[in-house]
Image (tube, rainbow, N blue to C red; front, side):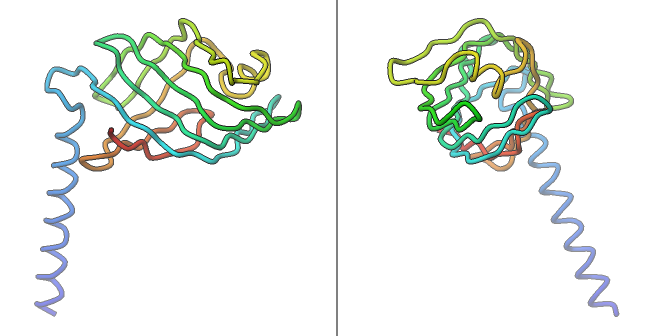
Length: 160
């Protein structure tokens, strides 16, 4: 019985130490500024009341200073309107709230590559409903973030 209690105490100490250590790593800089450069391979269904799509490819998140972020979509988008090649970058203003791991994003403009075949109307209806949205960021380990949103499934974004 003493061995079991001792073992449980050691495990609880290790878990508490890990949680404290991981929480101290978010945000990466001590001043509340977010430094983010990560990439994720994704394959998810996005279902909303008035839209449904399947995205397969890569997402990349990169901060550009203390208030700008680039969100790169590459891959395939399948929607009721058809299958499309996706290759575009959204430039956004952001505000990071480290106390609750929230990244507030405000869309500024899109840069669409020549190979992108997704009509703007299809892209925005299925992947970006509003000019404003929120992502939740949690440091997963030294090399990765857990990212999710209100309409975005949870995925792992690996540091570059």
